[in-house]
Image 1: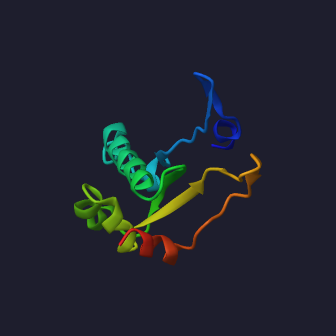
Image 2 (image 1 turned 90 degrees about the vertical axis):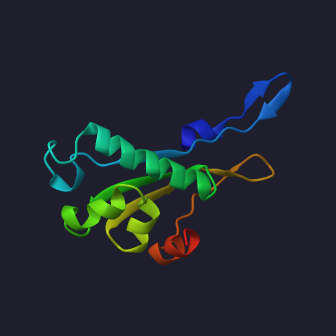
Amino acid sequence: MRSIGEENIQADGASVPVTITAGFISLPFSGLPEAICNWEKALQIADMALYLGKVNGRNRAYGVNRLLIAYEEALPVLDHDLSAAIKAGMVELIEVHGPVKLPEGNLAAPTTVSDEELASAIK
């Protein structure tokens, strides 16, 4: 994220800042066999993480690292609502912030938020 955000892109004589937003999932997910959490299910969860990053300000990556409860218990929620799964403490979320440019063009140090701040932000 830092490599992409370090340099502006020049387009039609203008300097355009570039950032990315990403969603990811650790595989194998929580040690589950592929028969239970195949690539399509993993991609669906990563896509929800990407969307969560977009609605929470962009220029960040959200990753679903592991389950904190049994898969069977988490599935009904995780299948369609990652935000609800996070709020309910069902999954461990990783958040990576992209660089922030200061007015002088320098990069500010990345910041992180606590689990409580993140839960509050996605309410």
